[in-house]
Image (cartoon, rainbow, N blue to C red; front, top):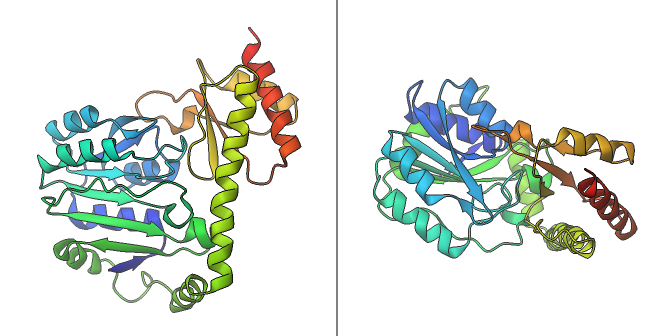
Length: 289
């Protein structure tokens, strides 16, 4: 077990410890912005694989690994931006693919672990030689608390520790003590349960409200955001919603190989009345020619 200064720091250190510049890294498409930017800036070659409501596409993963990708980064729950999580069936299919490439570094970025409303399904087969499971505290405790736990095989751990030596790369003991205090506090644990329920219910409320307006294609994913798929470029939809008073994130920026047509919505602080009004405004925007 090792510590890093957040999930992205962990991913970068793992890749830099075990890969060479230019090596291919399988990433989800669409992809979390910080992850894809890290892969590019660190000098690796992103190999995008599409995701659907159940997670990464196994056939796409197989093709990328067959073409020589040396590592894969998987999000098992609360994928950002789409909110998808691995089903048991999809996790099994991914394990079967990875089992045929035991030399590939498999990194599981379970960034939303403590707040996820979705069961854990591991995509890691027993035959994988180099693997790491990363769980960050930033989503749970706050974005400034940059600490992530990294569980891995012994060889990966040894390589990683060479990049986690004392000095500027050290994870603050103050942050470690604060994390331990929070995770062992009964009141805080109870608040996490309530937070998990709140975010799930917010997404479900918007999905139900949209369905009442005749738009049932958007499903309530897991995580902090709601993903609204669109049939075309998102900017015109985002501008129309802005005129109605809503600030949303255009989806194209999350695309790796091709633009991701969709909107990412954050519902955490909205009341039920505001969610209903948002759904009505979205319906009007979607129905416009």
